[in-house]
Length: 129
Image (spheres, rainbow, N blue to C red):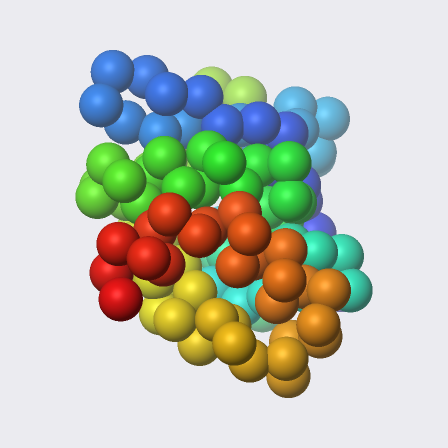
């Protein structure tokens, strides 16, 4: 069984970025796997959590990408907030950076997804190139 959860929003708290998981999720979210993939069909980045059944998937839909960019700019791994839990998403910055480099100019992810990523993360991609 694939456990899929969605980030509702990102919030800047002091110097940290907190990604708020939809509160109605009832599944255990697991522990950070330090891996990120994409779901180009859903136009989302997906952070993987180790769970009893394999992985739990934390989807970062396009409406959260500006908060992801803020996390990149801050340089520190953000936190996943679910109910009263706060879990550091280890490897988030490194994984997202690696994916952004790989997606830029690479239509293997689908032209629509690649274009969306290039537009949303343009400032970051220009800064590091």
